[in-house]
Image (cartoon, protein in one colour):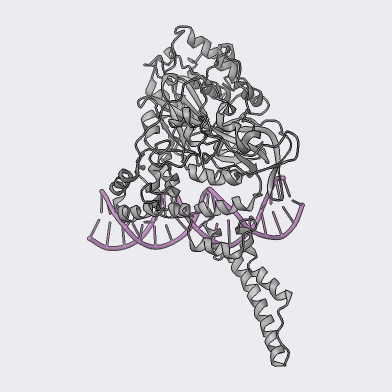
Length: 586
DNA sequence: TCTCACACCTTTGAAGTGG
DNA sequence: CCACTTCAAAGGTGTGAGA
């Protein structure tokens, strides 16, 4: 468990004053956890937490899209008010106890110790990283929920927002601009008074979802990719031809052009031959100026046009909810997956047309479609005691402190030494075997593609996300419409648990990080220089640490209401009233 | 490098309508 | 009462100018 880093960080920053939606790690919660854990362990030494004994699997959804971004070098915009991630993190979870309650949280951890800068057309290392910022967990709004529910649908963290405002008090995940981060998922089992073995803590990192935080997009290809795939950026598609600014600009250009043509015609009528001047070329360039910003670097206008003519299948998936629904069971990355038999990328659209034609037949049609395209679940189990690195992002790593260019992410698991997907599947054990054969996408290899039904409510357009949104549709008890606050979560837990909370001994076992460089594939090819992400050196093995959520939340809660001192005095006895009884919504 | 106002877009829920 | 449509507000996008 990487408590070391978190504890140091939290002490330097004030408590999040609005912890409604997000968790926060108070200054010495680690001590609280330790003490509480020690207290709890008193009666049950040697009992392994249930969560640690489960074969929990997590797979990142939308892998195709992540790979597209990763190949270029993913950038995530961070703003003062907070910016959502795109692609957002969506995961499927298996192996949980269906009847146990879990809290899912996500935070961002440094991918490396470097600061980057954009130099013309590539990322370069530009010095050492700045001091870490306080870890703020984004607690999934549906937390806590039964394992059954977490496993029912993919879990979306699309509401997670990133910011560069260290003073923000609205519960955003604070990042440094021009630094590289990777998402990290936490699964914490809620304590169950009737199950002394309940509790536990698992953590999963997603190196293939690594990104560089920026305040303005640097790589135009990233911009283009985002515009093509993000429904909210639809207004920037079609080369921006439907935008007012463009129209105005074009109108001005047209007027200019017409004026010049008129002048030339006048000249022509006066006997002088029209001349193709540079100015005229300028006019043309001017009229297509907005195109440049949408096209890939170096791309030409005709390329853009062809893009518009041939819709991106990813766009289609977003635009066509049926297609997305068909793709969903394949983890939504089925957008670009070819039919294994026909190798026809239109297969899913065809299926969509047939099965999802009527909005009134959502559920049934969806089920049919799922049956047709879903792959059987086959998720071999990596050994416990390992952090589940689901892949890696192949930023070419320059020599330290040199200003060698940092190339884009190399393709994943296509000849990829850093293939992301297989780790979860059976290939976790042999995907990076000595053969180093490029791995082709295997739609019928479950990996992350296993049948998951769509939630009852689907969105018209934003389906890949909204399908997951239903997970977050349960209103907060506070009625604010906001995601579940810690208070809400505690109330919810305790309303179910009633008395007897004291008997629990929530404990967790850290899954030790499996250093990526231990995988044979990373030793080859262009990734030879890739330094495995080691943002948070694990503590020595002889010092096992646990993260009982209950303790953490109790401490958090009590810190907020001024009971921190009492907690410390009482060695974080989880029996403090504020943790047992419903608490006012802060 | 960063901030901000802007236009464009989707999402969401309330209100209205008809069977 | 239910299903459907319409509408407006809220909020998520990238852009581009300016600091």
